Amino acid sequence: MRYLLGLLLILVLAAGGAFVYAGRLPGPAIEITKPVKYVGQTAPVEVVITAPGAHLSDLTVVFEQNGKQTPLASMAQPSSAEFKQEGTDRVRVSRTLTRDQVPDLKTGPARITVTAERKVLYGMRKVRSTASHDVQVRLEKPMISVLSTKHYINLGGSEMVVYRAAPPDVESGVQVGDLLYPGYPAAGAKMEGVHIADPAVKIAFIALRYDQDVNTPMFAYAKDEAGNSARADFDRLTFPKPFKKSRIELNDAFLDRVVPAILETTTEIAPQGANIDKFLVLNGELRRKNAEKIASYSKQSSPEMLWNGIVFHPFTNSAVEAAFADQRTYIYGGKDVDRQTHLGFDLARVVNSPVVAANRGKVVHASPLGIYGNCVIVDHGMGVQSLYGHLSSFAVKVGDTVEKEQELGKSGMTGLAGGDHLHFTMLVNGQMVNPVEWWDQHWIQDRILRKLREASGS
Ligand SMILES: [Zn+2]
Image 1 (spheres, rainbow, N blue to C red):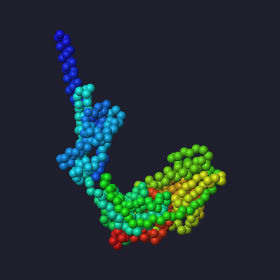
Image 2 (cartoon, rainbow, N blue to C red):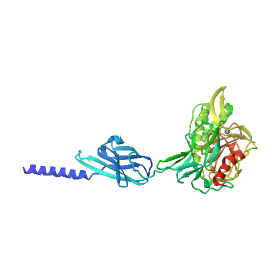
Image 3 (cartoon, rainbow, N blue to C red):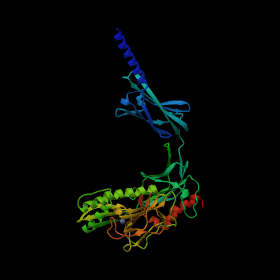
Image 4 (tube, rainbow, N blue to C red):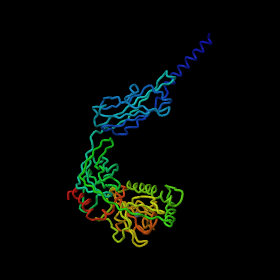
């Protein structure tokens, strides 16, 4: 009897101990991943709950502002949000906060509080935890209006838009189709007679890509961190441009020279087969990869105009062998084997002639670049850059500031080049554009200087 009583006592104590111990187990881990900081007219709310076995018995997400609580999600009402089981231990709760749910949502501070509860000790006890995240509600839409007028855009060409976006720290720019062109503070426009101090005035250089439709939608946009956005149209005319067609005959002597040389400096691709097969990979896939790499340099563009003088060096002492956006058909063994668009100008002088910077700027690339061979890219600021391909040697290095017409290197035939020439193109936020416009004094006067002067009121 005593023995039985003793056993019973031990069992009761053990059960009690387990009960107390279980109550001290940690509650579910709560992570409020969205919103990070701002809540706008709408905001995604995302919470990740981690609990061993994911035995959640309760879960609520509450939005709290000015003492008023609004439930956003609850396990009791699973229809209010998306509950997604991730593995055995995690539950992800997603919900979009809208003004319909929180009608008296106001600009100012707010808090999201999450409570989660899990079952322990075979479901006999529950442990809970709570987490809060402070956010800022911003309901005012940014303001944007375009100041510049008479925008004329050629297919494959450039334009400039001056606009006002407020508050001044809002992200803004111009969207052309699905491409974004960021705006830069107009105070960085260093041209004669131009002085724009208003921090809300921005400049965006834009491009209408050679392969976009002339009716591509375009507008200035502003978007804040809370997801509030605004857009503004601008008057414009766009013009189609006929691009030339040309045929390029490939032969084995050319392929034997260029294909192994390009592959020697290329790590992105490793094509197999005959030189003509490798060539087709270089001309297609490597051309695309090179374009992406070239476009990535736009992120390094200076927010200030580094160039001076009205016009870009026009290379008039060279013979034009190919123009911008020539549609090239490649022929090998009597057959059409490829088609590509030539996005630049081919300018030939004598072998190893000095290649000069089209304008003042900073060197952002000076090394082999795939099909462009030895290649220099100069940043002129505000997303405007210039590219020089097929060089035989370099006279500059990355980081150098170069003056207009300073030597960058000597012309050559590195990369995909049939003979000694300079491949030149202008870039606007990474997109290759027709340099003819940048060589034209009247174009610069009308599309850039006129608009800057109008905006600076001079
Ligand atoms: Zn070329």
